[in-house]
Image (tube, rainbow, N blue to C red; front, side, top):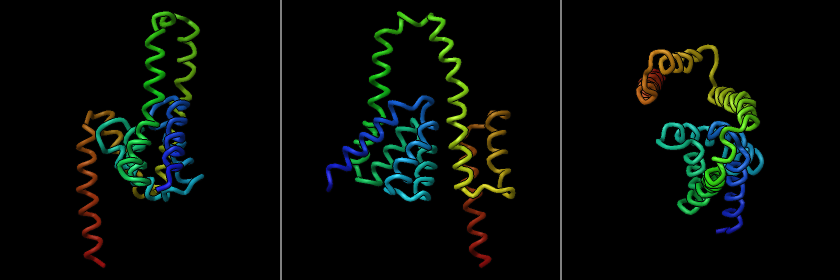
Length: 182
């Protein structure tokens, strides 16, 4: 196996982990750009599938997607390398902040900076949502599914787990009946 892919994958995930503000959803378009678009390591359809599995699996989205991509690329070693690349920047930054937090926690400038960052983070999260909707072939006929799901979670307090289970069961029955018709 080529050892350079391990170093390259680690550096990609380290760079994304270090310079992305907003968490896992903000990282998705950057990961997709690096892994799917620039390097063609994974097909777009496979990336969308890995993303769906990552969202469904327990844990942090960014770590989950890095593990699944690393595993797809180079098995267990690849998943360890990409997970470390994703986790280490946050760990180092949090440790550094923890050392000095008491010095600037009440600083008005720092507070205003964080208030300014919030809208940008919302945009970074919204962008991959629209991209995923396009890739998942969401159209005017099936748009009701994510809308109803979001409303059930947000307004009715349904657990996302029940939504995922219902969607899986519904998808199974929909596709099994469409297969028997043909």
